[in-house]
Image (cartoon, rainbow, N blue to C red):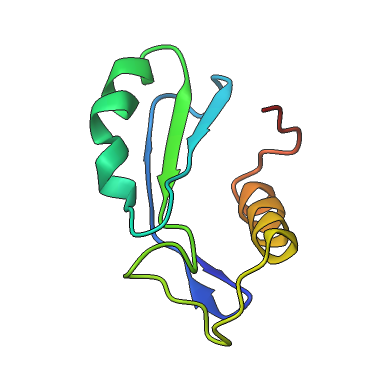
Length: 89
């Protein structure tokens, strides 16, 4: 999926009609680090793990700027594209 000109790669498992559970990683992480957790929750949830732009070596930010506001904007657009409208932490 392309968001704001950045390619966002993600993994997804579970049924689309289940409540969504989204896994994010920290600096230098990867969506692949969440595979075991995804497998554990996939029976009851729609589980999604994405490479987060600016925090993943495979998804650098084009402008090399990374702020919380920019990250939250990306996350809002990512969830919207996946059809997830209401997020809770």
